[in-house]
Image 1 (cartoon, helix red, strand yellow):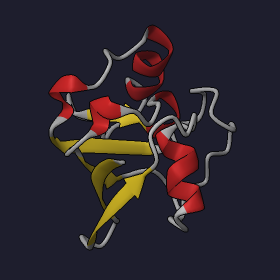
Image 2 (tube, rainbow, N blue to C red):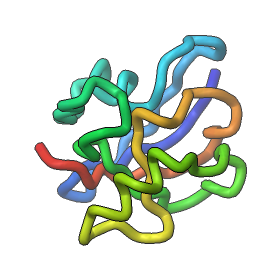
Image 3 (cartoon, rainbow, N blue to C red):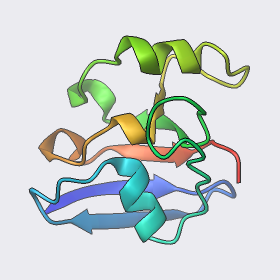
Image 4 (cartoon, rainbow, N blue to C red):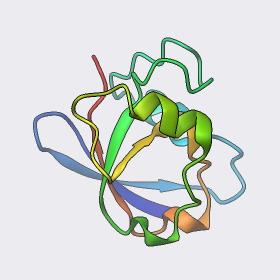
Length: 105
């Protein structure tokens, strides 16, 4: 199982356990876990409504790609720890990571 923590917009944290090899991205897992994520573009890295901030453990995540970086550059609230949940595959690199949901409701 892949274990990571999600902090919602009001600061409440929940630990999630996701089966290895599930083949979903973080945005899909968050939506399935009943977090309010718009995901307007459907995971194409075009809208940034699935913006998350990596609060802890992001060192093992895959590097940010150019499409993701271009969209994050348009967000005034983006930080150096910002990512798009749609661009992060749920796999062992997420083990122990803490994500905070930042995108629009």
